[in-house]
Image (cartoon, rainbow, N blue to C red; front, side, top):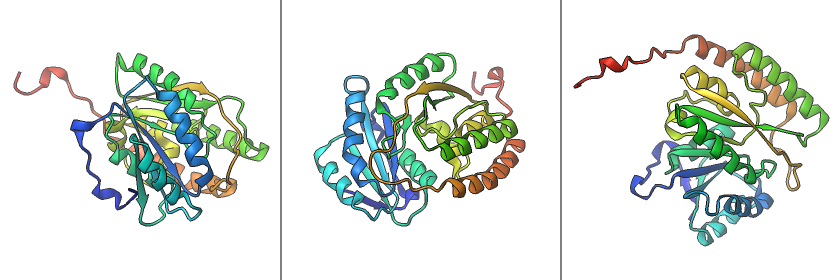
Length: 261
Protein backbone atom coordinates (compact mmCIF):
# COMPACT_ATOMS: atom_id res chain seq x y z
CA UNK A 1 0.00 0.00 0.00
CA UNK A 2 1.04 3.65 -0.40
CA UNK A 3 2.18 4.99 2.94
CA UNK A 4 1.38 8.52 4.10
CA UNK A 5 4.47 9.39 6.09
CA UNK A 6 6.45 11.95 7.95
CA UNK A 7 10.01 11.33 6.71
CA UNK A 8 11.43 11.56 10.24
CA UNK A 9 9.60 8.35 11.13
CA UNK A 10 11.10 5.86 8.69
CA UNK A 11 12.53 2.53 9.78
CA UNK A 12 14.40 -0.01 7.69
CA UNK A 13 14.85 -3.76 8.05
CA UNK A 14 18.55 -4.52 7.44
CA UNK A 15 18.03 -8.29 7.44
CA UNK A 16 15.98 -7.92 4.23
CA UNK A 17 18.30 -5.38 2.65
CA UNK A 18 18.92 -5.37 -1.09
CA UNK A 19 22.28 -4.03 -2.22
CA UNK A 20 20.87 -1.22 -4.36
CA UNK A 21 17.96 1.19 -3.86
CA UNK A 22 16.69 3.19 -6.83
CA UNK A 23 15.07 6.37 -5.47
CA UNK A 24 12.65 8.25 -7.72
CA UNK A 25 10.98 11.48 -6.54
CA UNK A 26 7.77 12.39 -8.38
CA UNK A 27 5.16 15.14 -8.52
CA UNK A 28 2.35 14.88 -11.10
CA UNK A 29 4.04 12.22 -13.26
CA UNK A 30 1.17 9.72 -13.62
CA UNK A 31 1.85 8.95 -17.30
CA UNK A 32 5.55 8.33 -16.70
CA UNK A 33 5.25 5.96 -13.72
CA UNK A 34 4.67 2.61 -15.43
CA UNK A 35 7.04 3.09 -18.41
CA UNK A 36 9.91 4.21 -16.18
CA UNK A 37 9.49 1.38 -13.67
CA UNK A 38 9.51 -1.12 -16.55
CA UNK A 39 12.76 0.39 -17.83
CA UNK A 40 14.38 0.30 -14.39
CA UNK A 41 13.48 -3.38 -14.00
CA UNK A 42 14.84 -4.18 -17.47
CA UNK A 43 18.09 -2.32 -16.79
CA UNK A 44 18.76 -4.11 -13.50
CA UNK A 45 17.46 -7.58 -14.29
CA UNK A 46 20.21 -10.01 -13.37
CA UNK A 47 22.61 -7.16 -12.56
CA UNK A 48 21.91 -6.46 -8.92
CA UNK A 49 19.66 -7.27 -5.97
CA UNK A 50 17.63 -4.08 -5.91
CA UNK A 51 14.50 -2.27 -4.80
CA UNK A 52 12.67 0.69 -6.36
CA UNK A 53 11.62 3.44 -3.95
CA UNK A 54 9.11 6.00 -5.24
CA UNK A 55 8.31 9.09 -3.21
CA UNK A 56 5.21 11.02 -4.24
CA UNK A 57 5.36 14.69 -3.28
CA UNK A 58 1.59 15.35 -3.06
CA UNK A 59 0.65 14.75 -6.70
CA UNK A 60 -2.84 15.69 -7.87
CA UNK A 61 -2.94 14.00 -11.30
CA UNK A 62 -3.53 10.35 -10.46
CA UNK A 63 0.09 9.54 -9.58
CA UNK A 64 -0.83 8.14 -6.12
CA UNK A 65 -3.46 5.82 -7.61
CA UNK A 66 -1.09 4.63 -10.31
CA UNK A 67 1.62 3.90 -7.75
CA UNK A 68 -0.81 2.11 -5.47
CA UNK A 69 -1.90 -0.20 -8.29
CA UNK A 70 1.68 -1.01 -9.31
CA UNK A 71 2.74 -1.41 -5.68
CA UNK A 72 0.34 -4.37 -5.41
CA UNK A 73 1.79 -5.97 -8.56
CA UNK A 74 5.55 -5.39 -8.25
CA UNK A 75 7.33 -6.94 -5.28
CA UNK A 76 10.46 -4.80 -5.62
CA UNK A 77 8.48 -1.53 -5.59
CA UNK A 78 8.05 0.46 -2.38
CA UNK A 79 6.01 3.66 -2.31
CA UNK A 80 5.93 6.56 0.12
CA UNK A 81 3.75 9.67 -0.01
CA UNK A 82 4.44 13.00 1.65
CA UNK A 83 1.75 14.45 3.87
CA UNK A 84 2.58 17.95 2.59
CA UNK A 85 4.30 19.09 -0.59
CA UNK A 86 7.97 19.68 0.23
CA UNK A 87 9.92 19.65 -3.03
CA UNK A 88 12.33 17.37 -4.86
CA UNK A 89 15.16 17.44 -2.32
CA UNK A 90 12.80 16.47 0.49
CA UNK A 91 11.44 13.61 -1.63
CA UNK A 92 14.95 12.34 -2.36
CA UNK A 93 15.84 12.52 1.33
CA UNK A 94 12.67 10.64 2.27
CA UNK A 95 13.55 7.93 -0.24
CA UNK A 96 17.16 7.62 0.91
CA UNK A 97 16.11 7.41 4.57
CA UNK A 98 13.56 4.70 3.71
CA UNK A 99 16.00 2.77 1.49
CA UNK A 100 17.18 -0.66 2.58
CA UNK A 101 20.15 -0.72 0.22
CA UNK A 102 23.57 0.59 1.20
CA UNK A 103 24.02 2.02 -2.30
CA UNK A 104 21.61 4.60 -3.74
CA UNK A 105 20.72 5.43 -7.33
CA UNK A 106 18.64 8.55 -7.96
CA UNK A 107 16.96 9.51 -11.19
CA UNK A 108 14.24 11.96 -12.17
CA UNK A 109 10.69 10.69 -12.56
CA UNK A 110 9.99 12.46 -15.86
CA UNK A 111 11.59 9.78 -18.05
CA UNK A 112 14.38 11.99 -19.41
CA UNK A 113 17.08 10.00 -17.58
CA UNK A 114 17.61 6.59 -19.21
CA UNK A 115 17.71 3.71 -16.66
CA UNK A 116 19.84 1.76 -19.14
CA UNK A 117 22.73 3.98 -18.00
CA UNK A 118 22.52 2.71 -14.40
CA UNK A 119 24.77 -0.36 -14.91
CA UNK A 120 27.47 1.87 -16.45
CA UNK A 121 27.43 4.20 -13.44
CA UNK A 122 27.34 1.21 -11.11
CA UNK A 123 30.46 -0.27 -12.73
CA UNK A 124 32.24 3.07 -12.43
CA UNK A 125 31.30 3.28 -8.76
CA UNK A 126 32.71 -0.17 -8.05
CA UNK A 127 35.96 0.62 -9.81
CA UNK A 128 36.36 3.85 -7.86
CA UNK A 129 35.17 2.39 -4.54
CA UNK A 130 37.94 -0.20 -4.64
CA UNK A 131 40.29 2.49 -3.34
CA UNK A 132 37.81 4.67 -1.42
CA UNK A 133 34.04 4.05 -1.17
CA UNK A 134 33.24 7.69 -0.34
CA UNK A 135 32.60 8.70 -3.93
CA UNK A 136 29.68 10.18 -5.87
CA UNK A 137 29.19 9.07 -9.47
CA UNK A 138 27.10 11.63 -11.34
CA UNK A 139 25.73 11.61 -14.84
CA UNK A 140 26.75 14.20 -17.40
CA UNK A 141 23.99 14.60 -19.98
CA UNK A 142 25.34 14.30 -23.52
CA UNK A 143 23.28 15.92 -26.28
CA UNK A 144 20.81 17.30 -23.77
CA UNK A 145 17.22 17.20 -25.07
CA UNK A 146 15.83 20.43 -23.60
CA UNK A 147 14.89 23.85 -24.93
CA UNK A 148 17.61 26.34 -25.86
CA UNK A 149 16.65 28.63 -22.96
CA UNK A 150 16.82 25.78 -20.46
CA UNK A 151 20.18 24.56 -21.77
CA UNK A 152 21.62 28.09 -21.76
CA UNK A 153 20.44 28.85 -18.23
CA UNK A 154 21.88 25.54 -17.00
CA UNK A 155 25.20 26.21 -18.70
CA UNK A 156 25.45 29.62 -17.03
CA UNK A 157 24.37 28.25 -13.66
CA UNK A 158 26.83 25.33 -13.86
CA UNK A 159 29.66 27.72 -14.76
CA UNK A 160 28.94 30.04 -11.84
CA UNK A 161 28.46 27.16 -9.41
CA UNK A 162 31.67 25.41 -10.46
CA UNK A 163 33.66 28.64 -10.24
CA UNK A 164 32.42 29.57 -6.76
CA UNK A 165 32.22 26.11 -5.20
CA UNK A 166 35.07 24.36 -7.02
CA UNK A 167 32.97 21.23 -7.45
CA UNK A 168 34.58 20.46 -10.85
CA UNK A 169 31.30 18.98 -12.07
CA UNK A 170 30.07 20.02 -15.53
CA UNK A 171 26.45 18.94 -15.00
CA UNK A 172 25.27 19.02 -11.39
CA UNK A 173 21.63 19.12 -12.52
CA UNK A 174 21.59 15.56 -13.90
CA UNK A 175 19.24 13.50 -11.73
CA UNK A 176 21.11 10.24 -12.36
CA UNK A 177 23.60 9.70 -9.52
CA UNK A 178 25.05 6.86 -7.42
CA UNK A 179 26.36 7.21 -3.86
CA UNK A 180 26.43 5.44 -0.52
CA UNK A 181 23.38 5.91 1.67
CA UNK A 182 25.51 6.69 4.73
CA UNK A 183 27.41 9.45 2.90
CA UNK A 184 24.19 11.18 1.87
CA UNK A 185 22.65 11.03 5.35
CA UNK A 186 25.74 12.68 6.84
CA UNK A 187 25.27 15.72 4.57
CA UNK A 188 23.35 18.76 5.85
CA UNK A 189 19.76 18.58 4.66
CA UNK A 190 18.05 21.64 3.17
CA UNK A 191 15.63 22.54 0.39
CA UNK A 192 17.23 22.20 -3.08
CA UNK A 193 20.24 20.32 -1.67
CA UNK A 194 20.04 17.83 -4.56
CA UNK A 195 21.47 20.52 -6.87
CA UNK A 196 24.62 20.70 -4.74
CA UNK A 197 25.42 17.05 -4.03
CA UNK A 198 28.87 17.18 -5.70
CA UNK A 199 29.93 20.19 -3.59
CA UNK A 200 28.53 18.57 -0.44
CA UNK A 201 30.37 15.32 -1.17
CA UNK A 202 33.66 17.18 -1.64
CA UNK A 203 32.97 19.19 1.54
CA UNK A 204 32.77 15.95 3.53
CA UNK A 205 36.06 14.65 2.12
CA UNK A 206 34.70 12.47 -0.67
CA UNK A 207 35.29 12.43 -4.42
CA UNK A 208 33.09 13.13 -7.45
CA UNK A 209 33.32 11.36 -10.82
CA UNK A 210 31.26 12.45 -13.86
CA UNK A 211 30.18 9.88 -16.45
CA UNK A 212 28.51 10.71 -19.76
CA UNK A 213 24.92 9.48 -19.97
CA UNK A 214 22.16 9.81 -22.54
CA UNK A 215 19.33 12.30 -22.20
CA UNK A 216 15.86 12.04 -23.69
CA UNK A 217 13.13 14.56 -24.53
CA UNK A 218 10.15 14.63 -22.22
CA UNK A 219 7.45 12.57 -23.92
CA UNK A 220 4.68 12.76 -21.32
CA UNK A 221 3.55 15.37 -18.80
CA UNK A 222 4.94 18.83 -18.11
CA UNK A 223 7.94 20.13 -16.21
CA UNK A 224 7.19 21.03 -12.60
CA UNK A 225 10.07 23.50 -12.32
CA UNK A 226 10.25 26.91 -13.98
CA UNK A 227 13.55 27.93 -15.57
CA UNK A 228 13.74 31.39 -13.99
CA UNK A 229 12.38 30.28 -10.61
CA UNK A 230 15.10 27.64 -10.50
CA UNK A 231 17.77 30.23 -11.42
CA UNK A 232 16.87 32.67 -8.63
CA UNK A 233 16.49 29.94 -6.02
CA UNK A 234 19.85 28.54 -7.11
CA UNK A 235 21.58 31.87 -6.46
CA UNK A 236 20.18 31.99 -2.93
CA UNK A 237 21.20 28.39 -2.21
CA UNK A 238 24.64 28.94 -3.72
CA UNK A 239 25.40 31.56 -1.08
CA UNK A 240 24.34 29.13 1.65
CA UNK A 241 26.49 26.28 0.29
CA UNK A 242 29.48 28.62 0.03
CA UNK A 243 28.97 29.37 3.73
CA UNK A 244 28.75 25.64 4.54
CA UNK A 245 31.90 24.92 2.57
CA UNK A 246 33.93 27.57 4.42
CA UNK A 247 32.81 26.15 7.76
CA UNK A 248 33.28 22.46 7.03
CA UNK A 249 34.80 20.27 9.74
CA UNK A 250 36.75 17.34 8.29
CA UNK A 251 39.97 16.80 10.29
CA UNK A 252 40.42 13.13 9.42
CA UNK A 253 41.52 10.51 11.95
CA UNK A 254 45.02 9.14 12.30
CA UNK A 255 44.66 5.34 11.97
CA UNK A 256 47.46 4.88 14.54
CA UNK A 257 45.25 6.56 17.15
CA UNK A 258 42.47 3.95 17.01
CA UNK A 259 41.30 2.90 20.44
CA UNK A 260 41.76 -0.59 21.86
CA UNK A 261 44.59 -1.64 19.57
